[in-house]
Image (cartoon, rainbow, N blue to C red; front, side, top):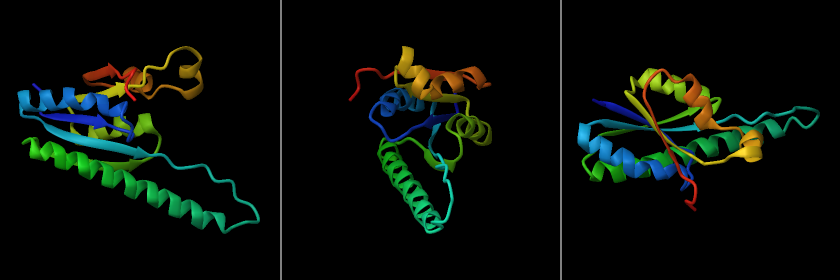
Length: 149
């Protein structure tokens, strides 16, 4: 039923709440798991202090490297359990990058955790889960990770 499962993560324990569900599905359907982390660019306002551009690039590269290391560790854990995996670090807006990756990877399922925000917190922080839900063209497994540290 599922051959490729895309798992967007942000490095938080809350996002990782989806992993046990993904592990079970991957074993059940002998599916490949594609871990994804999106590194969003930071808006830089330039002025007379041109030196900040170098700091921005260094910070952006560091966040990209950290994401790659994080995903590689998860890959190792899943491979030890006999699950085929792939890791992908991409850049851009989170919702758009998830949708693009689902298309590019041929994902049969996108599996992710919602942070469980409601009310003003959801309005203020936005909701990646809601953005994906409203625009995705394939099955989406969404769990609420509220209460996870």
